[in-house]
Length: 488
Image (cartoon, rainbow, N blue to C red):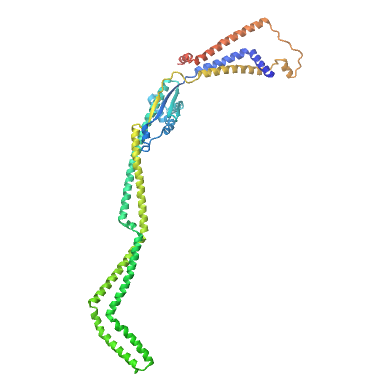
């Protein structure tokens, strides 16, 4: 604590000893800062607050119309309002770019305006604030108002163009898909009526028909064999022909055992002769038997059976061929139906979108989706927003005090002379004696008067500085107006 008090007293003595340097340098720094603050050009800020009001109609037509949300609109604000195209239109209306003949100068002006334009978005409240700073308050006000008006006009116009373009595009696409759907339906109907008719057949019924036909075919074959036997019998005489071979065989067996005089052999030979004579007599009757009604009826039945057999074989072959073609026909029909359904789904979606786009177009044309409402238009700013002279003057006072004391310390550091006996001892020099300073009363009195004058002048000057600070705190801009007139 003693060391701190010693250092404090040391610095106070150092400041007192160099009071002229401290006060003059401090006041000079303050003066330079104050003068510099008034030499800085005034910047006036104009503001406009715009509210994006969501229409009640937008909620009523939700799902029927497609409208951009407020969040999407606000998100694009920063880029849209500082876009080159929009700023060029504002410049044309303000006649600011007429003086700019070169492209480089125009681009520089656009970048300068973009840097001066600030947009603050309050997405939760649906508000955005546009501010612009310039040394000309009228220009700042007009720029902000024209920028906001131009943006609202451009936004409304672009929304209408987009709505018209979207409606036209969807209508054209709906017509295209309607034609495709019609072609698909025609192709499916033509296929069903022609080659694809077999796709609707039931394979189980075809198999049943094949089995029934095969069963009837087997029965017909039996009938055919029976009819052929009947006709053969009618032509050859079935009884004689069946007994004669048996008797001949019996005769051969008997002849192997007995002689021709054996009674049984004689009897069998007589029977064979009788049957042979009967066969000869019936062979003439066979020709007349083929012309008999019974024979013709049986032959006609046989022909009918054979024709039915041919028809059944053809039916079975046809049904088997149909069974083989059904999978391919069904696959092709399914592909065509799938294509038709796909075209139909797209067409229905297009028609639904067309209705939505029409509602959206009407909403955009009549500005029913969202409404830009200017809450506060930019007014002519009276008080400059920069420079902040109160802050600069206060900083100048602090900097003056610190800078003056810093110069005093710097002077003391640059002074290499021995100022007291302690310094001599630290350097290892022998101290033989200490001669006290002898002050003359007249010189002390004169020095005291000079110090009082210095303090008085410094105090008055500092009071002037404080007066300037108070004027700025009270928003009295007399000095800035005077400086402005001098430089105008």
